[in-house]
Length: 99
Image 1: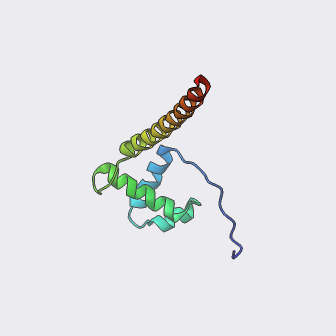
Image 2: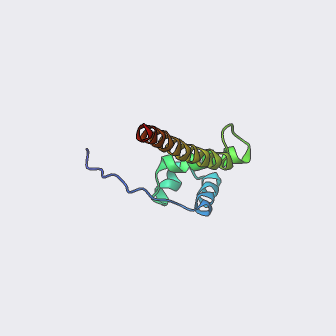
Image 3: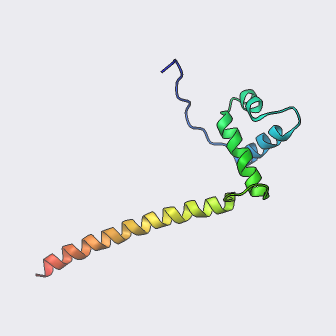
């Protein structure tokens, strides 16, 4: 490592992200300059601008609503798989007990 420490993961409100995107879109501002001024990563700022463009319909991709639903469905799917696996193991266990 070249003296750089990993930055702790931070979370930001939807309102804050919206304000950052508006700052980037003002004439004379760039994602890099806004990120530097607000002590954010340029990658995060660019991702927020990209997602705002998708949500607005100016760019192809999954909207924030669709991403939230996808995340929820994946979580639900994982829980259902775990429940199914537990039931399979219980079935095998009780099948042995009956014999």
